[in-house]
Image 1 (spheres, helix red, strand yellow):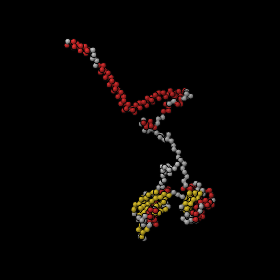
Image 2: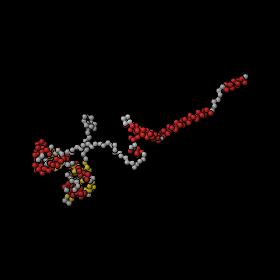
Image 3: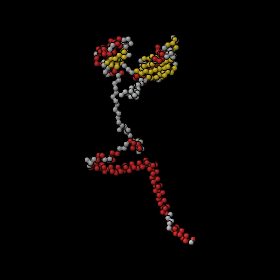
Image 4: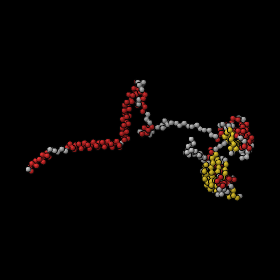
Length: 317
């Protein structure tokens, strides 16, 4: 009975033959080699994109050089076949500055301004200051009470050519005569003695732009042999450092600032007006009364445009 059991078990085992090991190893090796090749291609693509791009450009350039002569012959033989739109090699003979720099030709002349768009310059506006002629009057002059239209007619009768005077405006310093152009304003100045004589006790001069400088702090009174003295009474102009720049920079007016006048402090600041054309020659520091004094240039700042409705930074719409 035992022998029969063993025989049956042996027959069941013999029904399932053992698979050969060599094909299995071969398939495993093929799968591994395929995955390695895919991985290597992926690594090469991710590591060297510039190399691939350069190879692609070389192949494209070679193809263009190969096809270019035939396209040029077609363009000559068939001029009406629309060959103007064909990309012939003659269009690519002139390399750009980027290609020249990439190839390492450092000595080649690269024209960067050849294709730069030229921005047109806007027309320069006429300056109002260049057209003005000032008639300086004292605060109690009768001409300040005259109406502008009547004042303009009176000035037009003072000069031979009435067209030289466009308008006459009463200003804090006197009367402003407005000319059509700066050249005609210079013509009006030729009759400044006649205009000053007709007005009486007046000074006629060309209007100029003035720059304001603030000097200080300075003592309001300087101790001298004759006692305390205000530096604006001649002492400031006699200082060597200040006198050296008076020849190059004419000074229009000198006065204490309003805050210095109202303050009880012994030190204050002086306001000086010089022509705008000479403002760059004015120094930033001076040695005055034995001390180094700073000089500050006052610049006019335009107010920020704001909307009256929403208070935004734009004009009211």
